[in-house]
Length: 333
Image (cartoon, rainbow, N blue to C red; front, side, top):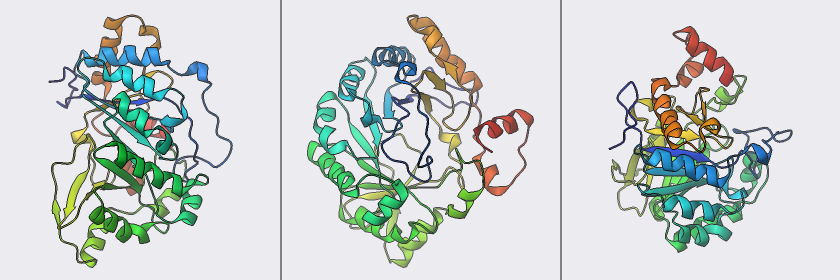
């Protein structure tokens, strides 16, 4: 049992580790096509420091890790880091979120190092549309990454599809077919307002109830599924007779904060109690002092909010109190 319990009784055993803010794509819902300024490499936590922070967390009950970015596979030597993390007592599950472009070449080394499973971003199955959404890269390389993941034994293999109204909603049926025909777990994700200073994102917001409507229109018999391995807050379904499954992650229309069990370690060395909040605690002054690092985890529990209130941004609701409003304005509201 984790010793990391917040003010609202939620136990935390899961740490998301961003190893870089850099990415080899420029997805239209994530960042501008040009002009991005990334942190200098000197500002990033070294692998030694990441291992040190994880060891402190493991002593408090952190047992599950997810390696993220940016795009984590652009940082050299990632397999070596994963091998060191897998050797930490108490760590029992390590996963990776990636856009898949570089995965085919690294899958075997990552698996040998101790990586258990992968989440691969895939918003479209159409090569031309891929270029439009990602602004660079090659869909064939992502598909090769999926094939390599199956070959080396990652399980489950999850595909993350951000639904964008007017852009890829016409592919819902094709993704459901993929979940039926292949042993994959396709996760449809609501488009979220984080990082957007205006309301243009609202034009592309699509509630995930549309996925179930499409399944019904396709006369697919779906049933709830509760045994998909992982830490994500998705509602999971199985298509009767199918090889795989699909999930719905809806942080806006069905707020998932009540089930939150996660913290984030940013690439530049901050523990964030909430992935979609600005509050953070720097680990750098505590490096070299395991007790001080453990105290940071405990302080994160004390300041973690009940919810992120992104729904208020969608619904044009008034935020309930000034500190929350201030945080949302800093996020980009």
